[in-house]
Image (cartoon, rainbow, N blue to C red):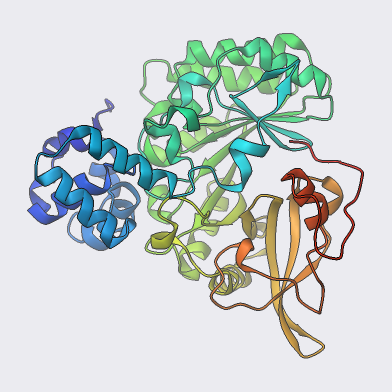
Length: 450
């Protein structure tokens, strides 16, 4: 299949365009002034149920919905665009809305970007000791955009909020300076939008460096869901698979981190064939997704998804909590409900599906998992633990938060059992340049890896 893209300027070219009401078309165009909109012919023709599209998760996953903005914001934008108003004023207001949507959650811009010999590496994030994220410049787009995406600023005009870099030698230099890094994650956007020749230059530079500590190359990608033909019929599909094979042949584990949000994405012949070909290179496919209202906030969906992934030879890896950015107010699920959905689905699958971890919040201090809800000394609490932390010594330590049934994120939780603060906060707040907590002396050692 030949790739064809649809965006707000050519909505009318979508084959099912006539099924959209004038109001829906208007709403899509208004919301996409703020949140990026892009889809393609595979999603439109093979994934969306156009007979029930208004409630179809694939439609909501790609087409911006009116409720993704606050009513006042939507109405102001509609007025500004409908009256042929000033483009400068419109751009200024759009920019203002975007900045209020927490464009870089969890300290990505402030605390994750490292330095190398006095130079800021804007295309690298290093939050956890063993793992480095790399944002290749040519991979900072996707075949289609998810409406929930926490990296939506990568696809807007907010150039000061983008991560990107194309100097492979700086990646290698940073790896040499940090021998604790065993994993490099190519991310974006979607690195698999890059041509095979571009991918090869990055991969080859890393392979040629012969870094003894490097054990795993990860690729974060939505292509299996949104464009499996990348591995089937694209002109360089065979070369891409050869590159995967080359990495594995060098003794470096290739982990393909597939973003799959709904079982429908696993329903086509194309995705089954693409999974088979990728696995045939020696790569292992791990799957992950946030828990999303309107998309997959049902334990039956997760049970089906994990079972199907295992049937296809993939490894369920993470269930995330929707991040506190973008359209979280539309997609977010309470931590109470997230725990219930995860546990209910987890209990229905066999042990081979229980490789999945979650529900996990990728928050400022690290990946915090909701282990359970219980009572201790007659106090109802959330039981939490770090799956990853800015300080690796935090990982695996249980801690407790007061039960808050309305909480949707870590910063809405408070310590339980009479504790003045969570155990990690003194060290974490030191990173944020907050000198002290009331009644508490901060640690002097700094083991943070940002």
